[in-house]
Image 1 (spheres, each protein chain N blue to C red):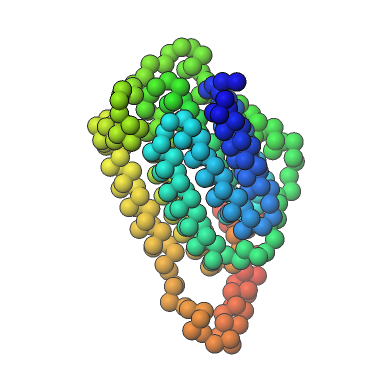
Image 2: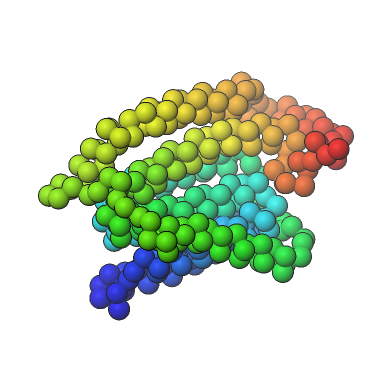
Length: 101
Length: 193
């Protein structure tokens, strides 16, 4: 059986749904970051697959930039998370409601 | 044939690993499963002929990002059980499905309307790394430099944010001092909650 573009898009969708469920269901901020990584990676698969099946390198270029953005997001996000943990001694999403009106 | 076997094997493994990541109650299991899933994803890039992207995936995600997470986890109390948000399960699953279908629509809309032409077609006779270099350093030079500046900003932000109050070393303090610090911290948390 030949693997086509649709196979990759379906896989990307499944991984994206898993990541979204993680973002919406988990309370721990660290797992929230993990779920964000899953979202970015699933989109990367779709980019690489489209790049391959249409003979175009633009998809791979965007995948590179997505990886760069993910890396810097992790650096800043973890820094903020460490500051939060030092001040409040937990990283639960429910305590992060100081901006509640 | 081998492509199909590889695709289904790695698809199953990736989905299983990411499922573990979002469902487990141990932060350490989640981290390990995520690292494994990242490596399995690089297999898709190799199957798709994007060798350089696969190598970058392994180096950046499994190397840099995972190392950063594991260093970050030293600051947090990871032995504590993770709690799940108590919400309506059906709403969550429904919203996730809708968003996923939306992503597929966004990707497939240009394909369905047959409006796709290769902007930077693959060069015959050049390896993947060479092609990537040619496109990246001609057409995408400005975004490449902007990404470099963004990484620099992120590095400085990480140092400034995480480096605060690093002077208190737990290994050099006595037990009484540590206990005193813990108590102060607990009081602070109680005030806020």
